[in-house]
Image (cartoon, rainbow, N blue to C red; front, side, top):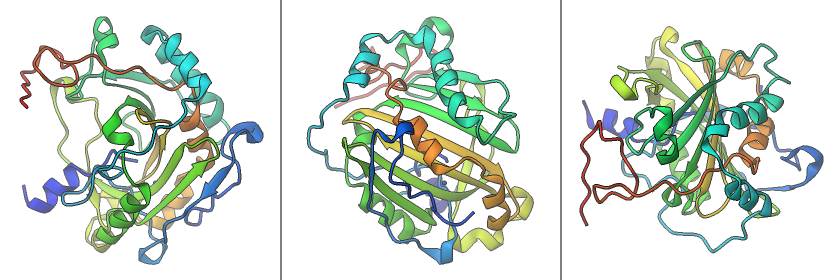
Length: 302
């Protein structure tokens, strides 16, 4: 594996018509939260590339500095107080589906996965130990939609404008836009290109394995191996983070724009939903900050 391949593997979580025409003044239905756009300049002649992780040599997902304390939405606090992980498959599907069916009437059934710190799929009796929750539509199809709920301070920290700017400069993000709601949530919308790579196995086989394709590499990838993803990441507080992505297989960017049918506003509306949160994962028994299922040996020091 080359250094470039390694970089693409650890670039941020996958998932981002004309480029970013979604700049509506309101992101939540009913206009409850107005959005103040702080758009980062679009690069690469409008090509939008959705990358898969935080590129080697780039800052963490949102930078490396913690933001100021932010007021927690009472609706989020109520969701955490009433949290029951056994109801989350239904909650995530109901809330996401109510938005998605407007643009994807044939959405199909939802697939729910709870995963640990090493992204191992957990059996239901371990769900309460999960590091993240995922609801997926169109699994193994050329049109996929994913909603991921995390409780992660590291994913919520830092400067989103810097993250977008450096992703654009490196070519992993061909478009990246940052918005803020009146109540302080940060909404990052990205469009990226990808190609499939050898998939994980065992308890990690549920994950979609893609490698980022940079702007300079688009013409070097066979059209039948090109995928494009539109992702919205919503930072609701210092720890509550939600990702919503639409991924399509397409031979080129123009075709991808036709196949990416969910408006970015709708992805953001799902991400901003205060019901889509989870409490902090329990610490691991191995000295790690988050729990890992005993099927994998993981140790942490320091």
